[in-house]
Amino acid sequence: MPRTTFFSQIDWVLAICVVPIIAAGLITMKSFGVEEGLGVFGKQLIWVVVGFGIFFIFSKIDFRFLKRTDVVVTLFAFFCGLLLLLFILGHTAKGAQSWFDFGGFSFQPSDMMKIVVIIILAKYFSRRHVEIAHMKHIFISALYAFIPFTLVFLQPDFGSAIIILFIWFGMALISGISRKHLIVVCMLGLVAFGSLWLFVFQPYQKARILNFVHPLRDIRGTGYNAYQSVIAVGSGEFLGKGIGHGTQSHLQFLPEYETDFIFAAFAEEWGFLGAILLLIFYAVLLWRVLDTALHGSSNFEILFGVGFAIFIMSHILINIGMNIGLMPVTGITLPFMSYGGSHLVAEFMALGILSSMRSYSRAVHRDDLRHEFVGY
Image (cartoon, rainbow, N blue to C red; front, side, top):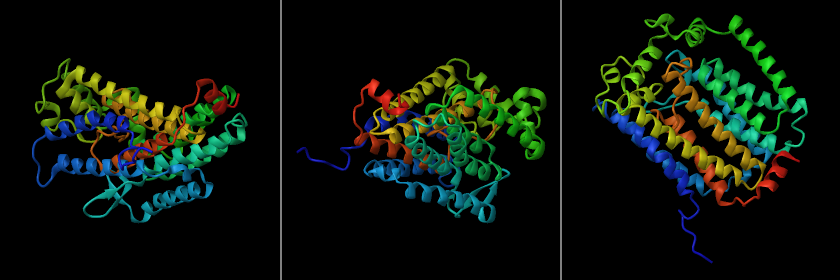
């Protein structure tokens, strides 16, 4: 038998896929010069090292225990409890009570909650893929998403709440929801949105949505961030201004350049060509995630991989969309690129779980996979 080492079962392709994206974020942060202490570059580099360490460790764990109902329910309840605890012990930053502050670092439970939602929905849909046409399963699965959606929304963290909603909607579609039920769900969503607009949304949240319809209506107020981001992206032109020469970001016209608007800061320095290359790297990452999902040993692995792909795509579409003025500013990070430890740890954990799943996956013929997954 071949000798098994610690690194033998790790999906190196999956690990390598994120390296160019991480490098793009680090180079962009480094170009802003030296700050007091470690600065955002130094802190992000530490989180990247921690993230890869988590990825390697998780790759060696057999995660088939996540198929057990008691494990998944306990995990879900624990993180819902953490979200509730935020209302008592949470630290408020940028108007949202979304963080636990531990002095040297802070932790945002909503990032981990997104991965937990993927796990519990994968568990639920994998056992009921044949019966998914029944309306009751749509509402039961929606309840698993609605609870964390509400807790995150009330922080208020509208962006993360929307991601949780997208994860549920995308996984429900993949699981075989009927067109009739899709129309019903969309109608209920419109009613819910109307209710939120009338009774829940804060004035600044309404302003962000109105800026989505007309981004330039208040460029000195609520539309300032989006306006400066659009200028930064456009000023990069085809080849960019060069590393360290982004005027919008370096002269501090562009806010949150290391988190929400890192794509704008990157595009200003690297231009249209650099932005296209970045999207190609994301496409390669998504290909590997979906390829791992399609080789899953059961419906649970398939659904988890697809759910994580939806997670990545939602973040990319919303973040880049708000950077180029096509989406409202919601505070969504760009996966593996934006500054921050919480989202990096959650993303590397999900990659580690996928790597582990691939190590015990089996090759499935496409026709057999269709029969097993959809139940034909």
